[in-house]
Length: 471
Image (cartoon, one colour):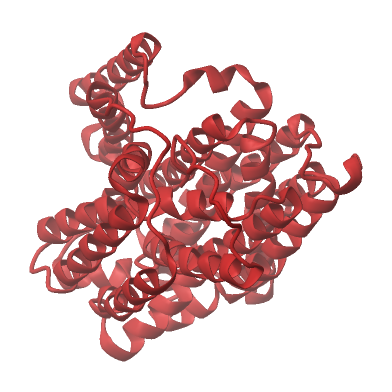
């Protein structure tokens, strides 16, 4: 989401109104990226019926987008530094919009998966620029913390509201409408970017790290591919074992290449900071929990209980409400006290939500399901601002950019892994057996919440906290 090198200070600081207008424009792009990470979840059963595919194929519909997005986030930030952030931002919007049209018109599963991958390319050109512009436009640490809270609120709202939006669109116009939905938003965003977002570049152009980029994408794609295809191939089959080995080799090759390059794709030295490493793992855990929840809930409500896409989408409203209310509150808490308190709240609520659903069955009352969704949404809302703050806190601008980009990558990796794991749990399972097969997924959600409680230990107060107050 952020780029490697921050823009040189402007000669005149923009007014507060201008700064928050720029934030609004960037937040709109993040709304697109977040919505398309989750909007198709509620439509997966309808897409499966329409294109004649099962859970395994449907997992690729989601993860083709998130894997490509995760793999290209950092290099897209470097391209924005080199060629201009507004230019790359606008190019990303165009690619995203055209790919959305291709998704809406896709005649087969293969065409839809390919178009979703192109959508991921476009989304990767939006995310790095958005937070870079926000951070550079907000020089005051307290104002920046509030801005990150607003940004996290919009992103959290988009992720949590995706299923609600998707359910309503599918009920009215069919599953293809979830992709048509993007077109007017892209047109609006292009107009606002032209009016309000100034062109900017990095202080110096970075050389592109193509070997690192290829190895990173290969490692992510192979890992997620093995998770999705594992139930079909057999976890101990020669093909699966080959996949494990290739993913491990790609990851090891990536680390080796990055340590030798003068300008690596990722600054692996950041992982020597326990707070940074824990924040990256925490961001991954949050998005694993969210995506496991969304997919398992969708399949449970539509396959096991026979609800419509609209009804199952509405069942996620408490999650959207919790995320929307608590994300800006979390940003405010980070600004006043530092990241530890909201991170403790995020872990407690996420753990409680997962534990509530461990015993989920066909006859479980809807109040319990809705209450668990509210708890998980609250946890998600509290998590994003402190994790971002912990990742970039205390770093100079030249390193804060890449730290933000790595954290953004971790979020998308979490989304992809969450979908792959949830899909692996329920692939080939009869509707009546889904609750039992899903139980391990709910334990995983609770475990992700417990990890956030551990991560709070490393979330030290930064200069963001007003008056140096400690949590």
